[in-house]
Amino acid sequence: MRKEFKGIAVTEVQSPDGAVAMAADHGAHLLSWTLPGGGNRLYLSETSQYGGDTAIRGGVPLIFPQFGARGNGKRHGIVRNIQWQLEFSGVEAGKGVLRYSLSSDASWQDRFKLQYEIVFDARELRLNFGIENRSDHAWQCCAALHTYFAVGAVDEVQVAGLHGLRYLDQPAGGVERTQHEELLTIAGETDRIYAAARDTLILRDGARELRIGKHGFEDVVVWNPGVEKAAGLADVVPGDAARFLCIEAGAILQPLQLAPGASWQGAQIVTV
Image (cartoon, rainbow, N blue to C red; front, side, top):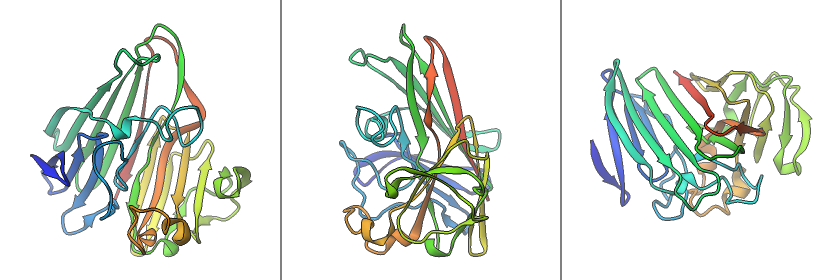
C-alpha cells in the first residue's frame, strides 16, 4: 500500500503471517518491521527529519559508496539521501517483498546500478543489497546496512559471537584492539568496526533474542552514541540512546573491488 508518512512517499506491505514492513522511496529506507503482537523491531526516532538531504535516524540506512569519513566523498555516501525507484511491492513465495533500484546518472565518474530487496515475514527479515559496475573502468567502494535494532535498555543487552575478533575502537581514535570478553555489553559510547567477523551474531535483549546473520559482507559495526554524544544529536530524543543498538553488516576495512561489468551481492538476515 502506497501512502504518505512524515511528508514522504512510503510503501507498506503485510506478509501472509501478519508481519508488516514499511519503507520509503527516499533512500530505499526500511522504516519498520513490525511483528504480530511484537511491535517494531527497528528503532525509529520520533524527531527524525525526512526528505531532502537529510538522513533518517533509525530503521536501516543504506551506506554506499563510502563508509563514514573513509574517503573524499560525503560521509556514509549519498544513496541514503536520494530517491530510489520502487520496482515491486507485494507477496512472493509466502513472504512480503519490497524491491528497489537506483542507477547513477551521467554526472558520475563511476557508473553503477544498485538493487535492494527487503524480504520478510514474522520470523525473518532479509536485506539483499547488490552493486553492479556499469563503468568502462574498475573502481572500489564500501557498503553497509546500518541497522538500528530496538532494545529495552542498551546497557542490559548482550551480543554473542564477537569473542576473539580484532576491531577498530573509533572513540579511541581508531586504535586496533581484540575483544577478549565472551559477550559484548554496552557501557557508554560504543563504535567498533570488527574485521572479518563471523557470519552469525546473537543479540540478547532480556527475554528476547535475535539471530543476526550476514552473507557477502566481511565486517560488522556495533554502534551506540551513549548518553553524552546523543545529547548533541538533534534527531535523537533525550533518553533514546538507551533504546537502540546498531549492528551493521559492512564491506568497510577491505573495500569492494569491481571490474567493469562486475557485480557483488551481500545480505543481512535477522531471525527471531
